Amino acid sequence: QSVLTQPPSVSGAPGQRVTISCTGSGLNIGAGFDVQWYRQLPGAAPQLLIYTNSNRPSGVPDRFSASKSGTSASLAITGLQAEDEADYYCQSYDSSLSGYVFGTGTKVTVL
Amino acid sequence: EVQLVESGGGLIQPGGSLRLSCAVSGFTISDTYMTWVRQAPGKGLEWVSVIYSGDTSYYADSVKGRFTISRDNSKNLVFLQMNSLRAEDTAVYFCARGGFSGSKLGWFDPWGQGTLVTVSA
Image 1 (cartoon, rainbow over the protein chains, first blue to last red):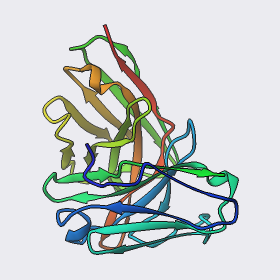
Image 2: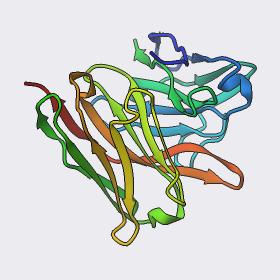
Image 3: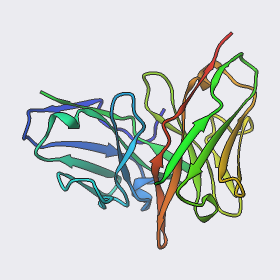
Image 4: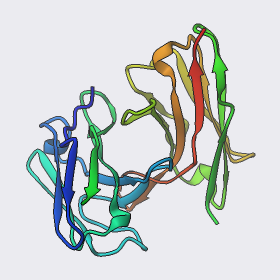
């Protein structure tokens, strides 16, 4: 069972804005460890969307943004597009586990 | 072009052993850290193991004592030796490059396409 909790699903119409939360604890996000976000299209490997809380790798559109506060983080997708239908995962480091942790994952559906 | 290609997956009986390989091109693995992440069928991502420069390695509790990560810098290969396999180890196993910038680290990019390990009698 993951130590980072995400909503199982979120949905929105094309063009809308959706947000995905990632709730941790004082042992991971709240301890100051950075949060990353990944997108996984069906049948494909995960792809890095956001690193160190809010930074986008080159090639990731600015429709994707993220932030971190306290023991939580969030990913926002604006101008939702059909191609954004995928599973999204947050990831951080946990000091009690001495290892990396992923969120439970959120399926984004474009209505 | 940066590329990671996993191999070595397959069907194995409970209690058996398997060694996964991750062939890397486009960068030198000795310059960074490498990780393995798995995904059980229909489930989420689970971090498995990481190997840092100097060969320091860490493992998820679920595989500690059974799995061993290693690398061959001369061949740009990363391995995951899996022993005492259980049904719950059934998953697609991905290798990924560790990302870092200055003192910041902890992200994985890019990832390989994964190799499926099925543990079943």
